[in-house]
Length: 113
Length: 114
Image (cartoon, rainbow over all chains, first blue to last red; front, side, top):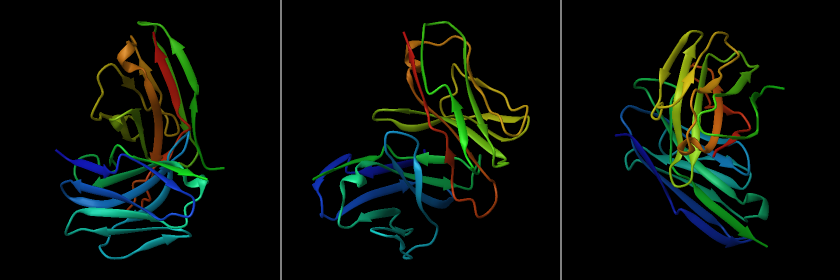
């Protein structure tokens, strides 16, 4: 069965800290891995990764994929209270419904002032 | 503005009373899907549609129905809601092309069945 596992489940840090969120997966016919940020509403897209070793970066957020070890990390540097959210990892594969995203349960990040 | 619109945002209903949650997108996306989100279980797919008149079950379809008569609309129907369908529901849409960047989500519908 395809699955996506995120760790840690939750994390509390102080403003200015750097955090690393983890996502491991076991899926057949891997196509891409996506990161989303979910505040008290719909998930919003952060990154899509398809190739190993190529870092995607947007401001203080960055992410990288390792297709050999089947995991991805999301880094947030110099955290701010506005980074507090649930971060979701999802994987898309080529089998069956080709647009289906398989989601992890998310990591709840709380950034304290 | 490109968006997915869900209604209602909040709904409290009683067991057995049929309800429909509407979803509409203005991006001409072929693919639409419904997910439910529950604590500790994450987002799980209920139904999806690859295009007009083409729908199929996701991972948790029991107790739900959908239809796709027009490309822009994909309503979720609960014929006889039960308390275990209390959840946060998201509609999502996307293109089906090679450079698909994932879903655009609606704002969510928080459903409580008592």
